[in-house]
Length: 271
Image (tube, rainbow, N blue to C red; front, side):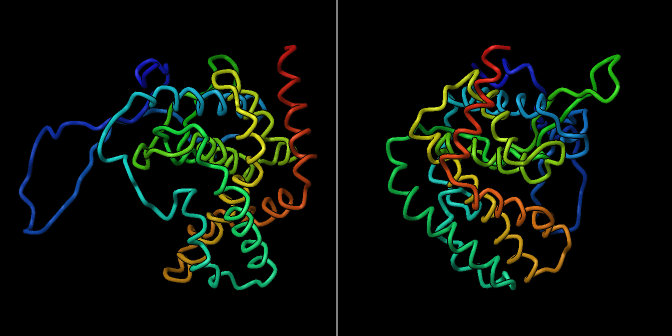
């Protein structure tokens, strides 16, 4: 499978058709093709869309599996999920003591219970930022209010990492803005779609809660830190619902969550 065979639109780099003189200086310009559609964030979330998100995540990683480029090797970014231990340098930016303690607990758990188990997990090139702003939807013809996934944006974070991380990142962002169902059910629908194209190994499934929580904490901590440096309200977008989401996820026992998600996944088997 390749990106061309995904049957979904992606933004692609374009050659510069014309050049104009500009004042002396250094500039970096990247021109991408326009991809029509609405961002997922702008439409009501449904279990059908979550299922499609899961399918898309799995298919994209399968499509990227053969991609080779020196630029995606050894990429070290603070937003990579394996950079979660570095968040301890930024938690001071969270002013609320309870929220700060929650973040520290999630970070410590990741260091103790996830990092030692990563080595045998499957990895490859991943998109790296499957969020609600980077997924496009289109309205079904003749069915107002019903949407299907139609495009992916922003391949600027592609790097080699664990497939578990890609899945956890996508689930994290589906949960944050989910208001159409219990947010703890949303992962089950994403997982059901994902499982259609890549069966989730047990050693990945058991780490999902930890990795989803880690991404939530990562987004919240870095958002708070960035806001402390540059008070732009956009930087606190995740925090509006993110803290509630993280607490609900963290307070729910892993065994209970795993059963909940498996039950939802199994409900699709007989459909």
